[in-house]
Image (cartoon, rainbow, N blue to C red; front, side, top):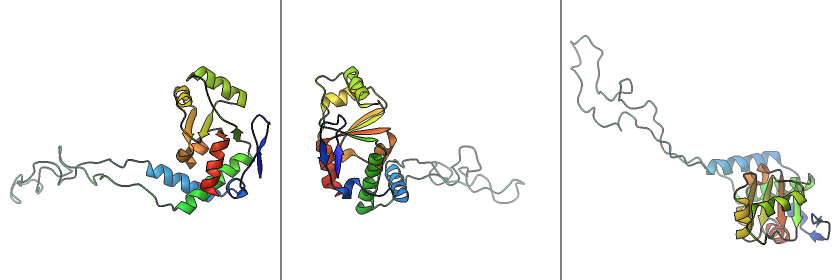
Length: 201
């Protein structure tokens, strides 16, 4: 299949296997959930009764005091005691095999193309790392809530986009289901599309 460049100057031939697939909502949802779960740090931790220092001696004898029996001053019922069902560090990652992950990326790219939210440009270069120049260039393309996908890192572009909360600049290796769906539009260079095709076809 052929994709037109944003300026209409020419067309780029790409594989249908990568850019013309039906939208699989269930697969895309699974990929997004797995990606976001893998980004969680899972470092939350609290102290249970066995983790709090002290409490080794029985506070008072078992019987005869008239008070409730107690074995430690670090019981969760006591002030300065441990926590009931204390949180422990854990891994939130969910399994998703490579074939399913790539299938989800194909599905998202195909849907973006059908909705005309994926634009191709011959290249995306800035002479200077100026945010003003980048905003002007994005305005010419039709909007400013954009994910820019490049084949290689571009320092000028990265510096220019750094101050814009609604613009992200990534390489092909950094493309994922979340950043593809987060932005209103995706602008990709021809070289980036060819590398995506190699990865997904």
